[in-house]
Length: 253
Image: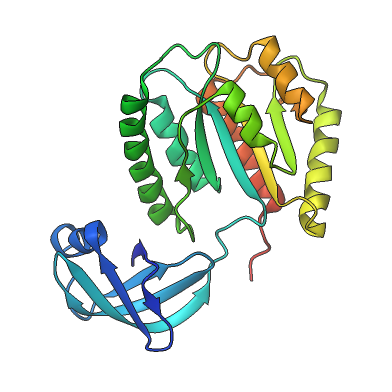
């Protein structure tokens, strides 16, 4: 069943409406027709709908079933990704969405090789947002994770102050025992609802500068290890998101 996202759901009248790019995609690309079933997500609810009218401009449907969406983690995770070379960020965004990240923020760090002006960065961001939407639909997410505006490291550190916990994988971190203790603290905090928001910082290909580590330490970041292997920038975030997903995911019904 094809999945879409929409805020135009009328529970009282049991109707749903898709417009814009979603309507065009449903009618012209997927070639859906009247009578077909679609799934429409609105966050923590999924609506099974039967199409009653369809055109490239608008799709109308009636709600036949409502179910909860268990795809969202109980803790919102923001991935602050050091901007990498080439098209690596596209893969990182796709996989981060599949693994449960609530948002992804590209960050210009000292050792980020690629630089660009704001206009070009915003054009890239729009493309990245489309990748996020596609991955959210494919993986059954209840929401479309936001790809944030490109930030400098200083701006990212300031933005990260809002999180209840900040995780900073670093090659010079303490041993695995300390990391496991931090993860136990996260698991306990998630259950007790004292930790609702987590930030993850991943360095670019060249890693972090010491000054960047120090800046994150000052706002309470937990410097952890991901093991004895050196991971690429496109692998490190995925590994940690996988661990957190396994640790925090709700029990299946």
